[in-house]
Image (cartoon, rainbow, N blue to C red):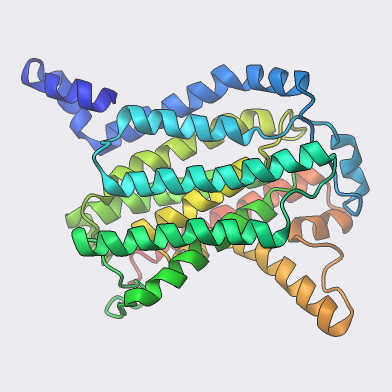
Length: 361
């Protein structure tokens, strides 16, 4: 909103020309998100404590987590607010890519909110049934996929896929893109949700992934850079740079309160909302396949659960001491801060690999 109010003033004072620059508005969005997190974080924690909105701990989880019971949860409400407000302030609200990302994030966050609410009212660690959760996620994912197909007919957006290392191979999926889009956003939402098991682990990893996609979104929307680096140019998509910058600022602000020992947990409202956001961004800027690298840590966490379940059902044996993967290392004797920091390092390495593919195409 401020963007639309302030930019026309450049005709009176040239200093307002700065609002034309996506980098300037991205920095403003990140700082605004950070300030909102700092300003409201303490108040939200006290409010959640007063309402007795505390985390329930899985009885089969590591025994060291028992002390976390009752820690305020649903802090993802703060994260989402710290994302939406800066985007609405500093982005071009006529941009359709931006609204797809915002609505997708909101709806995935809403699913997480219902899941958290049911956990609290039932005083247990189970909220929505797996079936109900997946059906709701698939419904939102289908909406995202249909929106992308519509964009492909009315904007320069394409239903082609870009593969790292294979610059010339860009198959057009047509309507097959719909189930593919569902797979990407639902998989991303659940992968981030599974990663959210240790203090600061998920939000720190989201911070790294969002920072990477901030760079990628800028490149995808910049015709010259996109051509030079062999990246699909999606005209208009660089407003998503502001969206990614807001996620970075909101994540950094929430990490202040969520670092070990956590004062508040994000809950499913945060992890699903953020996971859905990252998956949607990957689709919008045509970096869907690269998400496997950008979110490499999330992929490892999700795969550990899949491997554990399949192995137990087929062989009656577990591969890991406990899934997701971070709990396996906890049960091996690693202290929680060590697991968190080492997993962050892995997330950074995956992000570096993702960015390195830009020049290896």
